[in-house]
Length: 557
Image 1: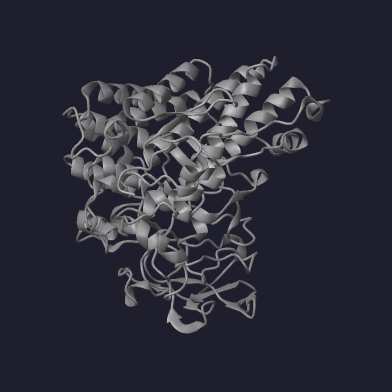
Image 2: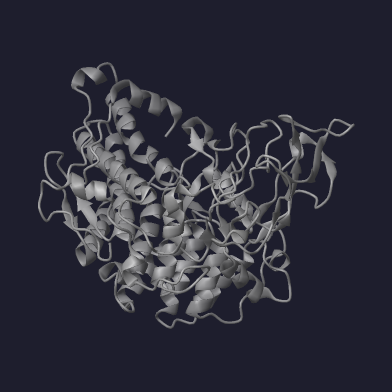
C-alpha cells in the first residue's frame, strides 16, 4: 500500500477500537465522510489499515519478545542493574514465569486483535463495494484475518470468529480452530494474485501459511501433550504446499544471506510474505536498534541514531554454532553467522561507505566516535573509526566488548554482556535509530519453505529431506557457503533452523514443535508444559466479564 492510500484512509475512515475480545469493533464513518471518493479509492482505503497493524505487532517488545526472549536464543537482563528492568517482565518471560498482567503479552494481544477487527471491518465494507478491485482486496482481508487468527492460535491457543460487527465472537480451539483457518485460506487461494509483492497476501503467502498450519497442527490440536503426533496426511499437505511455492518459479534463494535483511529487501526474490516497511509507510527500525550498544552509532548522518543495549544471544545458543563447526570459527564456516563491514582496528572511512558489521557481534566493537554530540573526523575529512567505550552510560572505561556470558547476575547483566545480533540493516533514514525503518520484516521466505518441507519429509522418514536442507546451505554463494550436511535428523534440523532463522521470531514455535521448550537454558529451569502458550491478558478477561464463562484463562495462569 502506498502513502497516498494511507492519506485516503485518513480522509474518510476513523477507527474506534474496543479492546474487549468479545467486541472487536471498529466503526467506519457515515457515508458523508467518503463523499467524492471513487469506489476504488474507498476499497484501497479500507484494506490499508488491515496491513498497517503488522508494524505494531512486529515491534521489538511485542511479538519479538514473546517469540525470542521466551526461548534459548535471546535473553534481556537488567542492564547495569536498572535498564530494561520493566518490573521484571523480561526475566519472567525468559524463565516461563509469565503473569496475566504482563505488558508485552497484553500489548501483543491487543495489536493482533485490532488487526483482526480491522480485517472484519474491511470484509464487511468490501463485500458491497462494486469496484472490480474490491474482490481482490476482500480476499486479502480474509487472508489477513486468517493470519491474525493463526497468531492467536499459536500464542494463546484460541481463535475468534466474527463475521458481523453486532455479534459476539465465537471462540474456537484445537481442531475446530485449525479447520477454520484452513477453510479461510483455501477460500481465497483461487482469487489472490502472485504479482502484488511480499507486503500483501499472495498465492505464495497462502501456500506458505497453509504449510505452516499443517506442520504445527499436531501442536495446535493438543498443545499440552507430552509428545506430539504428526499425522502423515498433515505432513503430506505441508509438503504439497511447499512444493507449490518451490515449483512456482516465483521465488529464489538469495546468494547474499544478509541482503535478505537490507533496507531494499522489498524486491528480494526470497521474500514471500513480509511487513512492508518502506519509507513512505513510516516503519520502525527496532529490529536493528534493539540489541546493539548505546555507543554504536551506525549512521554518520545522524548523531542521535544509536542502539539501546537490549537482548543478547544466550551462551547456550552461541554454543550450538561453536559445537557444530569446531575447531573452525563459525564466522568462517557459515556466512549466516557474521558479515564484517568495518576493520577490526582504528581507521578512517568515507561516510558514504560506512556500514556496521552484521550478524552475531562478538568482542571489542569499533565504530564512530561521538564527542560533545559530534562525530570525530580524521585529518582527511573521513570518519574516524576506533574502539568504542560506554560513554553514553557514563562509563568511559567500560569497553563495548561483548562477552559470551550473559545472565541475571550482576556480572552477567552489565551493559557489555552477551553477544549481540545485528541481522536487519540499520536503516539509513532512521534519525533516532528507532523510527523510519525501510527493511521489510520477514514473515515467510523461501528458505523456510525448503526447511518446512524437509521437516515434513523427515517426520515421514523420507530420505530426500537432506537435499532440501543442503539446497539452502549451498545457496549463500556471495561468500563461501556452509558445507553440506552428510546426514539429517530432527535434532540437526532444529539446529539448522536456528542457524537460518535466528532473530526472525520463529524460535518459540519451533522449540515447542520439536519438543525443546521445556528444556533448561541460562537461568530457565521451568518445565511446565502449560507455559507453551501465554496467559490471556487480565484486561481482556475483565472486558468480557459481562459474558460469564465466555473467556477462560489458559491453564497454569
